[in-house]
Picture 1 (cartoon, one colour):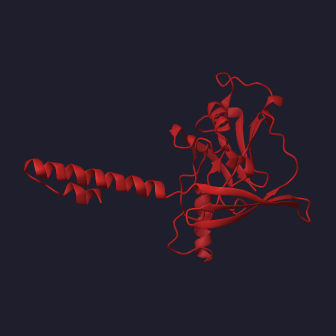
Picture 2: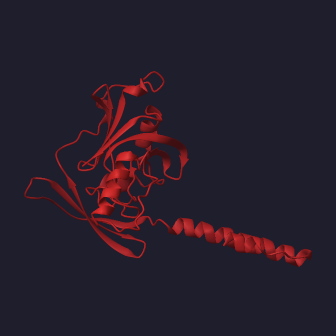
Picture 3: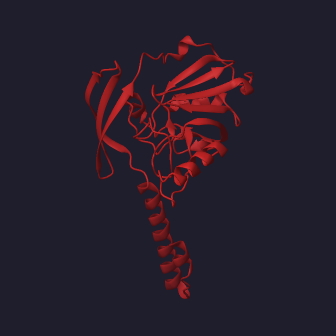
Length: 243
């Protein structure tokens, strides 16, 4: 659309005004497209909570996302300590970042920071609408599993902080090609990317607390939690994502 706008050439003041108007219309349209690519969940309600036959705590959520009405079941296993005040204090300037490992547990809905094989932080996390499924291709909104590293850190994300992981790495590409060869995914499928650990929009922490699977496959934390984790880890920190 921008190319179409740029192609107009006018002479005189009237032409100049029309050109400026068209340019703003194009920019506004592109901004709308960018916003419409993602719809925040609305009217989130906890419909039911119970324990299943395996003793797992199940929470059933219902909410609106765009034009869809979504019903989502969240399975929580066991009790998890999210009181980080019980863990030791950390100085981000002196910690050895090479000894850090981030563990993302999709079954228990948390991100755990390990230092020299000891847990030093644990945060509540949410994923996409199918958290226990491994990512197969672009657009499936699933979170990939396996070993990754933090590739890039963005302190100015629209979701507060963003830490990009190196998906797809070599092992993810091998799995992707195998799925294609077996016919599990279409031959025209793309592998996807732009997966990371990030925060949430301002005032959205309750989405994390309730367990709403709102992301497109990323790992989302409360903003105060992503800010602390962001300050501790570095580019190259290893990340294990597991069920």
